[in-house]
Image (cartoon, rainbow, N blue to C red; front, side, top):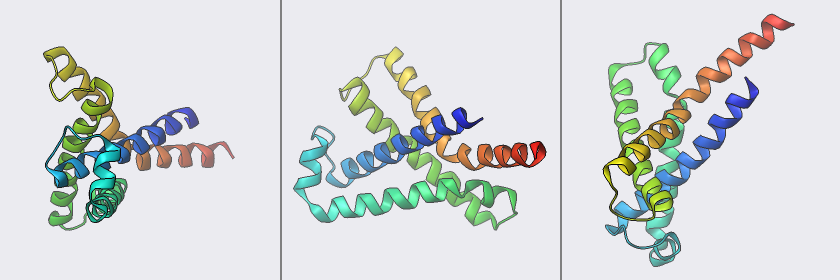
Length: 141
Protein backbone atom coordinates (compact mmCIF):
# COMPACT_ATOMS: atom_id res chain seq x y z
CA UNK A 1 0.00 0.00 0.00
CA UNK A 2 2.93 2.32 0.72
CA UNK A 3 4.19 2.00 -2.87
CA UNK A 4 0.79 2.89 -4.27
CA UNK A 5 0.56 5.92 -2.00
CA UNK A 6 4.08 6.96 -3.03
CA UNK A 7 3.14 6.68 -6.71
CA UNK A 8 0.09 8.89 -6.18
CA UNK A 9 2.11 11.46 -4.23
CA UNK A 10 4.65 11.71 -7.06
CA UNK A 11 1.80 11.96 -9.59
CA UNK A 12 0.15 14.69 -7.47
CA UNK A 13 3.40 16.67 -7.45
CA UNK A 14 3.53 16.41 -11.26
CA UNK A 15 -0.14 17.43 -11.32
CA UNK A 16 0.64 20.54 -9.26
CA UNK A 17 3.47 21.44 -11.63
CA UNK A 18 1.38 20.96 -14.79
CA UNK A 19 -1.47 22.94 -13.22
CA UNK A 20 1.00 25.75 -12.52
CA UNK A 21 2.32 25.59 -16.08
CA UNK A 22 -1.16 25.53 -17.61
CA UNK A 23 -2.35 28.42 -15.45
CA UNK A 24 0.71 30.44 -16.35
CA UNK A 25 0.13 29.73 -20.05
CA UNK A 26 -3.49 30.89 -19.69
CA UNK A 27 -2.40 34.09 -17.93
CA UNK A 28 0.10 34.82 -20.70
CA UNK A 29 -2.35 33.70 -23.39
CA UNK A 30 0.61 32.12 -25.10
CA UNK A 31 1.36 28.40 -25.17
CA UNK A 32 4.49 28.49 -27.28
CA UNK A 33 6.68 30.14 -24.64
CA UNK A 34 8.84 27.92 -22.49
CA UNK A 35 8.45 27.82 -18.74
CA UNK A 36 11.49 29.99 -18.04
CA UNK A 37 10.31 32.61 -20.51
CA UNK A 38 6.84 32.72 -18.96
CA UNK A 39 8.17 32.87 -15.38
CA UNK A 40 10.57 35.71 -16.14
CA UNK A 41 8.18 37.65 -18.39
CA UNK A 42 5.84 38.83 -15.60
CA UNK A 43 6.50 38.00 -11.95
CA UNK A 44 2.96 38.97 -10.91
CA UNK A 45 1.46 36.35 -13.22
CA UNK A 46 3.97 33.83 -11.91
CA UNK A 47 3.03 34.51 -8.28
CA UNK A 48 -0.67 34.38 -9.15
CA UNK A 49 -0.14 31.05 -10.95
CA UNK A 50 1.68 29.57 -7.95
CA UNK A 51 -1.08 30.71 -5.60
CA UNK A 52 -3.85 29.52 -7.88
CA UNK A 53 -2.18 26.14 -8.36
CA UNK A 54 -1.85 25.69 -4.60
CA UNK A 55 -5.53 26.48 -4.14
CA UNK A 56 -6.45 23.94 -6.85
CA UNK A 57 -4.30 21.20 -5.30
CA UNK A 58 -5.60 21.88 -1.79
CA UNK A 59 -9.22 21.83 -2.97
CA UNK A 60 -8.63 18.52 -4.72
CA UNK A 61 -6.95 17.06 -1.64
CA UNK A 62 -10.01 18.04 0.39
CA UNK A 63 -12.44 16.51 -2.13
CA UNK A 64 -12.96 13.40 0.03
CA UNK A 65 -14.05 15.51 2.99
CA UNK A 66 -16.35 17.62 0.83
CA UNK A 67 -18.00 14.63 -0.82
CA UNK A 68 -18.30 12.26 2.15
CA UNK A 69 -19.33 14.64 4.94
CA UNK A 70 -22.38 16.14 3.28
CA UNK A 71 -21.07 19.65 2.75
CA UNK A 72 -23.31 22.10 0.95
CA UNK A 73 -23.90 21.37 -2.75
CA UNK A 74 -21.98 24.51 -3.74
CA UNK A 75 -18.77 23.04 -2.30
CA UNK A 76 -19.34 19.86 -4.30
CA UNK A 77 -19.86 21.89 -7.47
CA UNK A 78 -16.70 23.87 -6.67
CA UNK A 79 -14.70 20.65 -6.35
CA UNK A 80 -16.11 19.43 -9.68
CA UNK A 81 -15.20 22.66 -11.45
CA UNK A 82 -11.78 22.57 -9.83
CA UNK A 83 -11.21 19.03 -11.10
CA UNK A 84 -12.22 20.02 -14.64
CA UNK A 85 -9.85 23.02 -14.55
CA UNK A 86 -7.10 20.76 -13.21
CA UNK A 87 -7.62 18.26 -16.03
CA UNK A 88 -7.51 21.07 -18.61
CA UNK A 89 -4.33 22.70 -17.29
CA UNK A 90 -2.63 19.35 -16.62
CA UNK A 91 -3.39 18.28 -20.17
CA UNK A 92 -1.74 21.48 -21.43
CA UNK A 93 1.31 20.87 -19.25
CA UNK A 94 1.58 17.20 -20.22
CA UNK A 95 1.24 18.08 -23.90
CA UNK A 96 3.97 20.68 -23.61
CA UNK A 97 6.42 18.51 -21.67
CA UNK A 98 5.71 15.02 -22.99
CA UNK A 99 4.67 15.55 -26.61
CA UNK A 100 6.58 18.85 -26.78
CA UNK A 101 4.22 20.21 -29.39
CA UNK A 102 1.07 22.29 -29.45
CA UNK A 103 -0.56 19.76 -31.77
CA UNK A 104 -0.99 16.04 -31.24
CA UNK A 105 -2.17 13.06 -33.26
CA UNK A 106 -5.27 11.11 -32.29
CA UNK A 107 -3.23 8.39 -30.56
CA UNK A 108 -1.14 11.01 -28.72
CA UNK A 109 -4.38 12.71 -27.63
CA UNK A 110 -5.69 9.53 -26.03
CA UNK A 111 -2.36 8.75 -24.36
CA UNK A 112 -2.21 12.30 -22.99
CA UNK A 113 -5.83 12.14 -21.87
CA UNK A 114 -5.25 8.87 -20.01
CA UNK A 115 -2.08 10.17 -18.38
CA UNK A 116 -3.80 13.42 -17.46
CA UNK A 117 -6.76 11.66 -15.86
CA UNK A 118 -4.45 9.42 -13.81
CA UNK A 119 -2.31 12.37 -12.74
CA UNK A 120 -5.28 14.62 -11.94
CA UNK A 121 -7.13 11.79 -10.23
CA UNK A 122 -4.10 11.02 -8.06
CA UNK A 123 -4.53 14.25 -6.13
CA UNK A 124 -8.11 13.27 -5.33
CA UNK A 125 -7.15 9.64 -4.58
CA UNK A 126 -4.46 10.36 -1.96
CA UNK A 127 -6.88 10.92 0.96
CA UNK A 128 -8.79 7.73 0.08
CA UNK A 129 -5.61 5.63 -0.07
CA UNK A 130 -4.30 7.20 3.14
CA UNK A 131 -7.58 6.30 4.88
CA UNK A 132 -7.33 2.68 3.72
CA UNK A 133 -3.68 2.55 4.81
CA UNK A 134 -4.65 3.96 8.20
CA UNK A 135 -7.37 1.33 8.66
CA UNK A 136 -4.96 -1.45 7.62
CA UNK A 137 -2.35 -0.32 10.16
CA UNK A 138 -5.01 -0.15 12.92
CA UNK A 139 -6.23 -3.67 12.12
CA UNK A 140 -2.72 -5.12 12.12
CA UNK A 141 -1.82 -3.76 15.56
